Length: 145
Image (cartoon, rainbow, N blue to C red; front, side):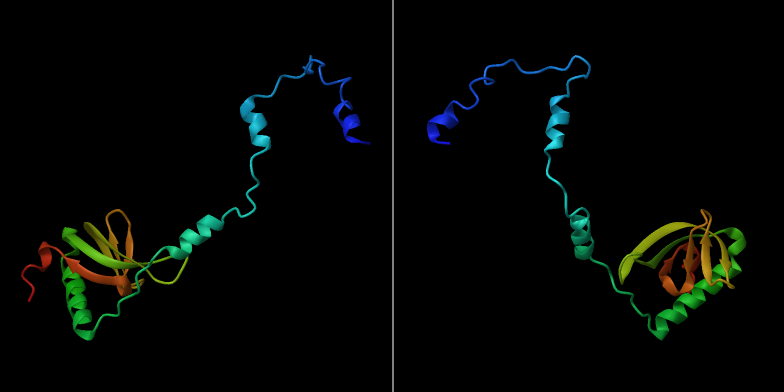
């Protein structure tokens, strides 16, 4: 086939009217465009990159002096647990997806101290393990040395 034959090859159909089905509804332009949208071969890749870039804090090991202060504060809370004292507590929350975590501060009334599970329980049932507690403050500790 030469060039002149290519030019006249579709002359018999080029000017025919566009076919419109009598039995099927015409597809919207949005749906037609969706057929040709790019295939996302790397689904989740962006999330993985974001997760890798997310920073976490390292757990801070308390020295003996800091542990003694926390133990005295927990003892004081045990003595006044019936009053459900209002405290502010900073604790380490381990990350569920990677090493490290974040230091979080919460405030509320203490419901109980579970010495068996070694947790401090707030009125809203939030449980904080003793080993994750970094700092405790509140009116109940004002008279402590």
